[in-house]
Image (cartoon, rainbow, N blue to C red; front, side):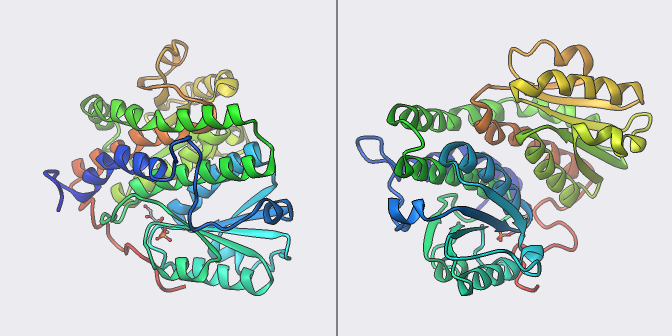
Length: 365
Ligand code: F6R
């Protein structure tokens, strides 16, 4: 049931605080230690892994991009992220020191499944992050992390994505602890910060009317762009996918630093440019990029942390979200982008839960 909401997508956007809470809290013991029940990797196993691949499709791939940041930063293992349909045919370098992490909400995506079979055959250890217990991907993997997002019905993925990011933070923390690349103190502190995300998501959802008003400023656009740097670029990519798939507005995401190398030619009078500005060290650079696109006529909607006074001086609209550690910001910054996609597509008269040409689970290659 839609739980009193007009659409499954909105219900699922609102399920996110619960999904974050369940995915995390159900795996903490009374001492606040993470227990990943279906992951059997020992310290020896982890010390033997010198390289990881994260492979998935669509939104799950974007969660993987966040996963790379988390695993490299905390567990200190180099990670490559690839799209399943590309990975399969790229003759990937895999041996027994390689770990493959696949991400799939449904657990039935054909290319993702094929990628894991290939990696297994070449001797990789395969870990699956999936939302569906007993799915094909779960059965094929050596180790499984189940996200506890609950069933996702809307074609556009929302709560599965946030739960996948939480999964990566927890896996990265657990691996880091086992490998000894994090202190126990930092481990506990980070868990506390992940725990704090659910009420912060709630806080953003409480601003939905304000976000709807801002979304109306771009509802008639023919094309739109998302910009970000660092892990904000990942949010930009996920946000662009969500907007295009349900609003049918042609939307692209760019790494803000790449603008001058071509994409800025696309900016015209009134083109909506949505800028994600949450990474403290990269903020100044983002502000210069906002000025650049403004000078070419862009209409800038910025998403930034509360307390940031600089962004409002250059952007047309600003959506303020609560702050968290840089690494955790993607869980918060994606929420307004989901709401924008939803409101814009409703305003355009689209069927948000069942966008044209798309299926919830892609079981053909
Ligand atoms: C977009 C979306 C898709 C899926 C992709 C992978 O909103 O939902 O991009 O993320 O088809 O699906 P799963 O995660 O089921 O493998």
